[in-house]
Image (spheres, helix red, strand yellow):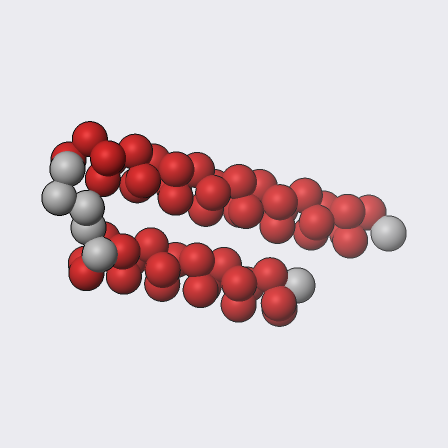
Length: 58
């Protein structure tokens, strides 16, 4: 589970770095990239929760 948390922290750091330094000039494209990145983050949260519930079941 520790590896999952480290990977999630790297994803969050990448999201923050993108929004601070690597924004795309076009607002629509930037919004699409933000939405996709946030969707990946929320999907990974769901994966971690599922993995934790599976471990607790055992």
